[in-house]
Length: 371
Image (cartoon, rainbow, N blue to C red; front, side, top):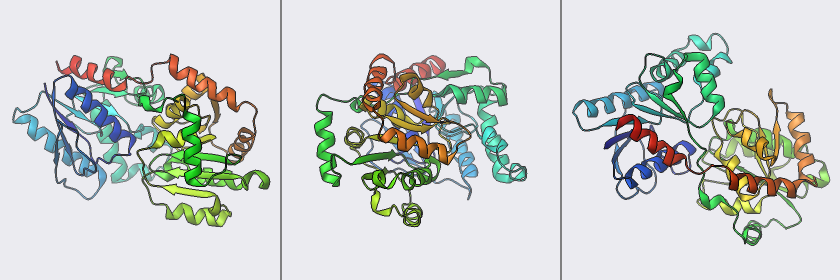
């Protein structure tokens, strides 16, 4: 088959973008041709993948999604493709990969006047174009929670909703020398072995709850805080959070990095992964942490948070989020005698649960739907 993939923007360290590339590679491996259309590409282009950067019309994000949909529809109308796979909600898709949260649920939580805005109405229309009962789009989802929300708001027929395995990279599994690798990284970062290393990984610092982690760090008992470093890795603007850290008096306990290709080294080095997200459709880093033997403290809104609970590999902060509760959990987990148990439980869970085959299963469904 000849497939058209559409994603608004590609950069190497975005979770949605990584999923797009993994699925494209799997389709290429199976002998299909894949052309990917985007408004921006950053990074290397894999062998066999044709990438076309298109100029999208519109000043707003939702208008640009319509523009990409029109671009893809024009290509299909000229008979070049057997199907269109989209990684953003837009009309005209044969298959949509659901990397975004349910916008109808997000809008419900906002002020009533916001729901009258052009932005809100535009995004709701884009979502309905994919999930409405009369739409023909098949949907690939990675979270049971999001699947249930879409069915509640749109009545999407269940046969169009396909739940995928999480799909993390196998290099996240802790190797026999994980402790040595972690110790080496700590040496590079200047973090002594007897100190605590907290880790956050993910682009979009506001959504991921970096401010919540900073407040939790500041609230630690002084003797614990003085021996704790928070390492934050992601694609975003550091400055607002550096200012907040200064106001909280913890700036000296922070290290920021832009997206890096050696995330496993950080997972092996850290003592605790923090992910107190405001919203998170999936949160692959939660499972990557389990695979690396790194205990997790996350908010329960994350799509993959049930895996932490099932694995008994950390703790979840319940909704509605309460900063004081998170602070108490963080302080207790850093000195808990359960840390080794959480570490072993996470590794065991990943070894006995399918958390790797998302791209393969997605390609199966693409072939079933379009074949």
